[in-house]
Length: 176
Image (cartoon, rainbow, N blue to C red):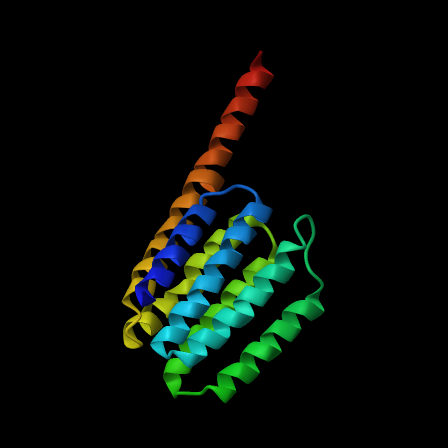
């Protein structure tokens, strides 16, 4: 049962990183965070659970800011809460991994551009790769690895290659 949460989080996350629009991406990310909270909690990874709870709340809040950036004070409050929860659940240097990863991804979500959200997801999840292995969350390790890959693929497919196609079409239509 405990790996089921990781598998459900994986499905939500991989699909979300292949989307072009922020709102559906954020809805799936929020669902994924809910499953991640359950996965970490079942495994006893308390700092990871706390960061996932804050990430869930963060995602709910940032989903409401679909067309504009959330106020900076919201990001600051999220950072303060993450810092306090990391301190309260401190289990040594291992606790820094989900903390740093969550800070990185929170910033890119606050920034708001889908292109940067995908890159921030890849960067922010890199410390989680180590954390999931060290806490025995193998389903979340696989999920996180696939999430990083999906983020990179989505970025390349939609933001790099997709931009080249748009520019190529514009050039062709302007020649006519």
